[in-house]
Image (cartoon, rainbow, N blue to C red; front, top):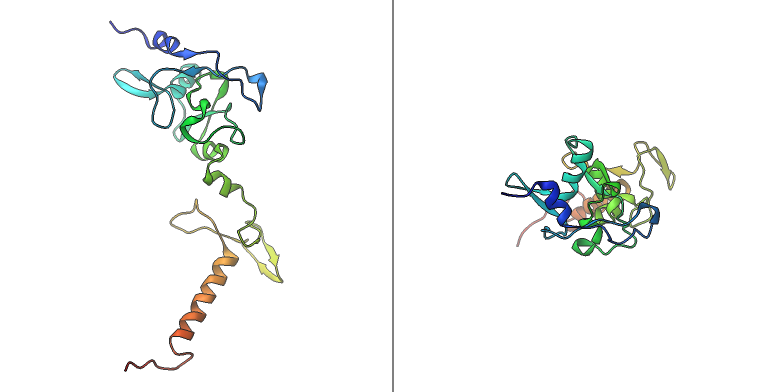
Length: 187
């Protein structure tokens, strides 16, 4: 007879984990000592299926997460925590440290390269990244300076740099094709 999930969960939790440095009032992390994924997240088997421990704990207390939502570890501090599986907070299953958020919000809080790039306010050439109308070097950018490809709207590029690159590409094409109106000949 298999033990109930709650008993198995308690048997695999170390409630004397590290206290988050950025907010000691949260109390210690409850680290999962059982099975983990390659990324360091705790896993528990429920009815023959492997389930994330953080999700399982959160849903026991608050009910199912809405579609598109996932548990986020508020004990994680990207400025202090080691990246990837070495972060101890990935194994935390303290309900007080879990919050249901969208995947986008979870990634933006993570300190991953995606989050770092999303937080940038300027492109690599110093142009402001904004959706609001703005004047840059005397040119009014009516819809802002961010270009989002229609097929990948989650990505963003500097419209000023993109326009400059397109003009430079057209100029080079004309120069290498024999100039304006000149027909290339072979031989």
